[in-house]
Length: 401
Ligand SMILES: [Zn+2]
Image (cartoon, rainbow, N blue to C red; front, side, top):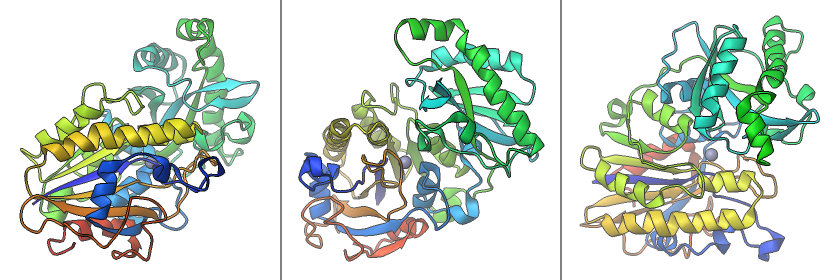
């Protein structure tokens, strides 16, 4: 038996008046996902433990079988792993966004999705200008800062305070000396970045400049028991996002790189399907993560969110299902809700479906789910409601479904 998890980041949503009371999942044309739902079984997962932030890192860690309350130490260390930065015991890794600051406000959490080739010289300038720690290049606006203090400070994800005042959302407590040093560096970064040729060019072209850094999601390296030791099978992760790859690395999973996987609507959808099928030559479980849907939801772009769900179905899941001629269990789910109306994540329990394809034991008739949506897949569905980190056991159980 092989296993595949198809994760549409932030796919779940609330009913919208613009859609006549439907959600984006209900409005999207997604025949492949709906076919899996109607031959399968559903339930809800609590991927965000009570009291924790509704981050993709927490939620994906949970779905991979690791209780975030026990294993999560912050987003920074996960992203450090993904770019090959190994943290020593006394080091703290912060996620470092490039943002666009305008009139004292956080205008864009991604600096117009600045490219990695543009951020490299910016990272170099930051390292030449500051000595509190070291900056490392990641992917696009998602970069890294490593220092030796600050693990306990309170930081704020910039996408949660979009259009908020910079001065109100800096690192807290503001009277802490480490926080004060880091906040000074954040504010001082503006002068260095704004005058950098990269940003002068961006501004001239009418694109958002990466004119400030934003530090958040910090922590020390987590200690995670490898996936194959925990579950007795090998797994692989396919994702364009650093932190998802980082979870895979700490879990000892294979990280499959897909050319031109961008995390956006222009991602290499077919390439991910191809890579997943190829990965089964060496592993038993493939975790395919798609970021584009969440990015559309953060932008509050309803049409783009629906389009991203449709592309996920047509260009990734379609070819993948065509290529599966072996006994395979498939799950489709988001990691968390990202309601268009809120432009940020929520901790609502996510709808998941599990179906089995090919060979003996393939589900032909499921429990009667008509299509994959928030209304059809509920806590009353046959697999009930359960903590996110209990999903993997259920999914890998041979008798289930
Ligand atoms: Zn997410």
